[in-house]
Length: 337
Image: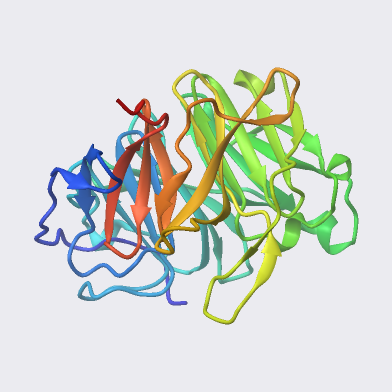
């Protein structure tokens, strides 16, 4: 891979808010992906913007990969100047997030020496602010608040030695200083963190949560690392087909956070028996007993190919991969009249 690039010059887009019948009887907002972009390999709705990760390539002129694009709430590109988008020698892009102050944070690994870094960009001015090397900590997933960046990561030095004597949650200040760490790796149900690609972490309502699908465990904590909790996620294990003829058993899930700090995990539970183009995805929340419980009143029937990108108030923001758009659907289904 030839480098990390924030999306080059603003592309003429047809971004719109419109009414679409996404599910029977529902009128919902949507935002189209800008022209020139293929299906992103990663997408987040955070701090009122869309952050897109592209590890496969798109049709923008002069693009390098991996790359990050940031869109405003209407689907227009926010980051433009190619000359100010180091690190130019990024070999792999793990995750992105946006702080409440409008700072884009990128977790990447550099090709030269394989150093893990957190790079910060000012979205309002479109310029690089700083690149912070995180030492042995390689951040796989990140979320942010005004106090800094939280990441799910590995201590590469100890992991390479076969040791599990390190934590998996790390907190870095806005200046890149490592402040604290939480949750010893040896306390996790299964020691498979190093090989995971679907790790997620989210922030909202003054709380944080991380989803480790390999361990099937949900980690939650409050400001400054307070009130840490570990929840074993007993969600249905299903036969999931990514491609025709391909079956594998897993407990997939996508993480979100409601405004009140309630952690929501959306998981696949099967196809609809009457409509093959729809799938059932359950919404779970951490209950009072410290276990995952179905979110009362939540919808469970979604069009095929929808993936949770974030939560906006009382609405789910989902990436419709087939339709190349983002759509808003209610967290809780309207009652039928």
